[in-house]
Image (cartoon, rainbow, N blue to C red; front, side):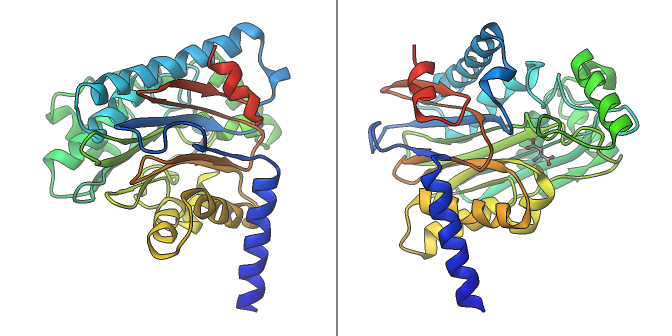
Amino acid sequence: MRATITLLTIFAAMFLGACGFSQSSSEPNPEPAWRLVIHGGAGVILREHLTVEEEAAYHAALRTALEAGAEVLRSGGSAVDAVQAALVPMENDPRFNAGHGAVYTADLRHELDASIMDGQGRNAGAVAGLSRVKNPIRAARAVMEHSEHVMFAGEGADAFAETFGLEMVENAYFGTEQRRIAVQRVLETRSRTSADKSGTVGAVAIDMAGNLAAATSTGGMTAKAPGRVGDVPLIGAATYAQNGVCAVSSTGHGEYFIRVGVARAICARRELKDESLETAAEIILSEVAALGGQGGVIALDETGAYTYVFNSPGMYRGRIDEDGVETAIFGQRNAILEGEG
Ligand code: ASP
């Protein structure tokens, strides 16, 4: 039985690969001095859903985030500073479901989750159900740096961040008209489209000293029950980094990512099996798919090799290193080339 499940998993992984749902670093420099890879959520993102202007705006937003992180890495800064720097502009951009632009809960509020992990020493910080911190990733970092704990939730998490001087906002700051329309629709129809479960932002990086780091931030799922906590603040589900092994940030239907323990599982396969990062990510994502979940991951290993793997038609994503920058949205490889223009 066990052998059958393993075989099914491997066939599913091969199917994902054959469908072109993964893209990796076969062409770019296999051993970069530093590299940053980001995502802005995975889901049913089809070209016909976006106007030419919207598509261009997404590419520009991804580039802004990549540049913010690259500035840190180019000057010899740390991977953990870079992933945080990349996420802040995406949290401030209403296009993404993180910070300003976060989805609404079923009671028309916003509860934000974030986590960060430094591969050096496997230090980590996470926050769940924030309602007043402007940039949740900064709160996760504060937990990692200034507390003996790994995760804070709810009012205690907001209060902790405030103590460390982070910028606080009214809960209404996070909302946008588009998100309000979406939550009303979900509450009326009692069903979510994939767009209602996407837009999370994440980053993985390797710095000049070879340190790895990962970070993820989200508003969660549209019309989620108050108090629901997704995969994003759970170290090992959405975020994981371990020097010498790999760094992962994921996005998708969080309940499935929690049950599979996606980020840690990918790194464990990479460490314990003689498998490429891409194969490890495909096998674990196929487990998510087998349970009925949709989403994707970005992953980077100790050599700087990276991969985007997703089982949805589209993921906002990009990479930057000393060789250049690429951004992509849709499921085809050529979208990467298009984004490079
Ligand atoms: N994983 C997030 C959550 O379930 C949603 C997403 O990635 O879009 O909260």
